[in-house]
Image 1: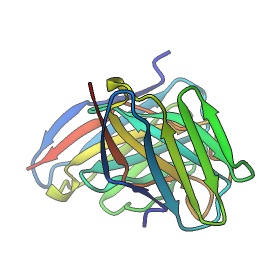
Image 2: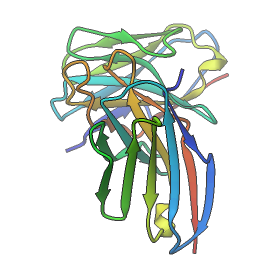
Image 3: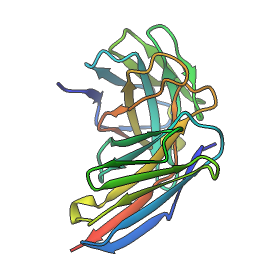
Length: 116
Length: 111
């Protein structure tokens, strides 16, 4: 099993360009998440999806949009990239299907984005 | 804002020594989880301790939870160079629908 797969692994953008980070999981998990990781800041939650067809904002949603395309796939879009969005982005999934059911998260290997 | 905060930020020890890292959190929890991240990799789940548990073991890992102090500790016994990594605690957000992570403790184990 591949687990959680993220593409691309590396990307360089210019300010104002748009791009979509793709994430797919093969574990039939209900919930999927997008985090960003910056030096000294730990991981911060951008958006999450508790089930197919639903998405919710996390701690730092500004500048991002998400789509839960189906149960397997959860994409993160930067409409107009800014240097402040230079970061490592992690997608994760879990079996959780409701509030206070947050169990183990399975992470992808990360997508390293640089915005010039 | 982040729910959990790890302490210390960085820890350097020799192989064979024990490593202890602490996590403090702000609100009531259902469970608390610890994760490990090797350099340049994704996070990997280590252990989950529920709010009604006080201690849990997994191999060389020992986790304690004190809900009255809103704190948890992760002990790694007989550390190895391969334990070099960053360690994060995580608890649920206020809605209970996603995990919020602390800033992590960076552990360096030298041989």
